[in-house]
Length: 402
Image (tube, helix red, strand yellow):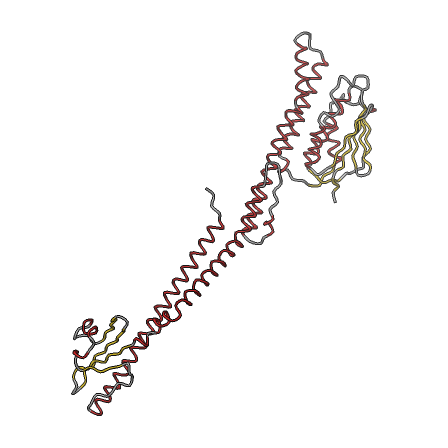
């Protein structure tokens, strides 16, 4: 069963508050009683010294200076409650007799023997009198202060726990595929650090899940077509001799499979692939060199590029993007493909002709578009596809290097 941290914190603060109140109340009562006893003790000591001085000087016992004090030369004259509560050997004693409160002190005086000084200190009991006179007011004030302390404890607990409750509420509202954004991330304390770590971890997990989902979808989508072509070619080979065209088609399918798999794995690791400036023209030249020797003749390729094309991105992904695009151009355009690669207006354009006669025998122009778009998006580039009746054009807008 879930327990609210606010209630737990309030219970702890309230318990601590009540404990402090009880401790200080007990300490105040003890101090009051000790002070009261010390006052009576000093009064008796001072009176005993005065009696001893007067008896030594005058030879007779004086009359006590306070009406609260009486002198007794015999125990028989002491009140019955005092005689019952003390013994003849006691030098000092404190006796409670109903509503009366006595303090007793015994002194040995020359020529007078054992003299007992008895003080009825009932009128001097400040603590008892205060409790009797204003006890109700004190209890009311104490309860009011405890109530105020509990209110402050509740407000403090609510104030301290509110950021955690907000963080928990925002975490409960998250769902798969969403982006975490916790309001407590800007706090300069441990809660802000916790919110930042949770936000980073959740977004990283969502990105990993998206890459896994995209990888699974792309494997099922991008590899199905070349596998189908290869399967059909092998099925035809069982009924007739294998021709050079069939072998070429199988080789092309294998090349496309290999390029697609490389792109898929590169996208799956895209978060861990750094980006840096590089020369895009060099990547284009490398991709052209990877094409088969008989793929294009001198008239089938037109290149119009600056001497250098410095861009920002990942060179490995850029090579895969260009290789995949050029391979698709040759594979989908059919025999007699004409390929043009130009740079204008900060955009790279790769256009190829379309075999209008046999276009029904080649695969669709849209094959691989999603994959190329994801490769470009992983580097922050823009890509646009422009299919037509006689040509197919792809425009790529890379991030230019500063």
